[in-house]
Each structure stands twice: as C-alpha cells, then as structure tokens.
Image (cartoon, rainbow, N blue to C red; front, side, top):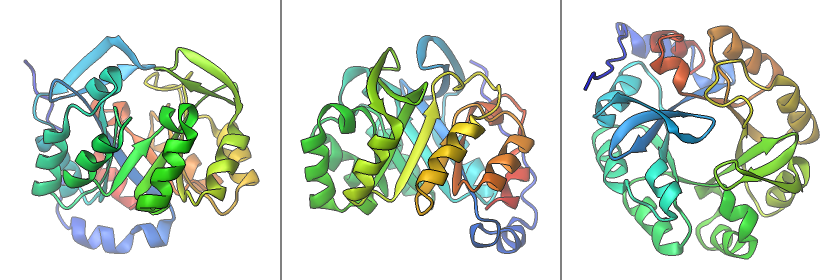
Length: 264
C-alpha cells in the first residue's frame, strides 16, 4: 500500500509561528484526518464507496502537521460514524499521547459512554453533529454536565437546511435556527460543511458563511468543505472565519502544509 508522506520544510517553523500566529492573523488552520480501519482516508461527499487511503499510519501524518507548526487537529472516526459508536479511539489515544495537538474528535458519539471514551483518550473537544439534531435533550444535558467549551458542534448543510444520516437526509431545520438554539445553550465553536462542496475541491461556500457570520458576529465560526487552494483560505480569512478545516487539498498536494503556518 502506498503511504503518503506530506513533505514540508520545517526550518525556522517556530519563528514563523511566532510571527504569523493565530492572534495576529485571526484564522486557525485545522487539518483533518479521517479514519477507517485505523488508516488515514478521505471520502467524497461522505460516500464510503468513494474512499481513498492516503496513509496507513495516522500518527505519522499528525506529526507532520505538528512539525509544520499547526496546533489543532480534526479527527473523524468514520467507522464509528457508520456503526453509531466510537471505534477508533486507539488512534486518538496514540496521537494525543505522542503529539501536543489540540484534538477535536467526532464520529459515533451517541452515548455518554462514548463521550467518556473520547475524553479519556485525550480529545480536548468532542465533535457532535447528528445527535444535536436527533436527541437535543441528551446533547443539552452533556453541555450542562461537561461544559459547552468541551464541544465542537458540526452543522452539515444543504440549501441552508441541516442534513443528517451521512448527508442522505435533509431536515426542515434552518441552519440559522439551529445555530441560534445552541449558542443560547453556551456553544462557542461551530463548524459548518456545505455537503455539496465536501471533498470536491471546488471552493468553499463563501456566501453561506458570510451570511452565518453576519447573523452571529460573536460566533467562533469554522469553515469546512471545498477548500482546494491557498486562495480559498485567504478568502475565508478575509470574510472573518476564525478557523478552516482542510483535508483533501493537503493530501492531494494542492496545498503545501509549510505554507499554512502563515495563518497559525
């Protein structure tokens, strides 16, 4: 199996980080690692039949992100998402134990036992999406019990409506109502994925994101999906995104991770 090694030049990365840190530039890059069978993969539009394996050793990839000066990691358990319970917690535990990356972990967090596994395995944040749609009372209980600052809320969107079930089902829930409700419950960080864009490298949904941030100017908003070039990231920064999740563009070589340090 071919193992992708993301080449980068880390010389003077600490100086670059100091010069171009998040506080100065205002947008944090959050690289993504999606896991199936313990391997680093990417899907297109959430389709498990459109799976591509990039590296059999996720820790190797995570260490490259860290060496490039990045500090966050978006780790997704695709096996867990499919099964409805956390599966790849060992990958989380290994990366958390052998890097200093601040990790948000999602995929299969449906019960409080799953949530405990995620936190015990080293995640700083638990990523929750469909549960917040289907079981609001459960999620609100978690927010009150563990603190809203321990969660990253994911909103998958199609035509400004929330999508669930691996994006196969579009609800009647308007994205703005969804966000407003959970801000009132204390949620501070939200990432939004336009399902029509994810994995297609066609550019992010700038107009959607601008509308969301105009409605909620104090929100720590993180863009997700469609990023294919550095120009895309620069545009996301200009419109005011606090973060951007980047995956396939890095693995396909369209974005060099050594260039990402300018964002922090």
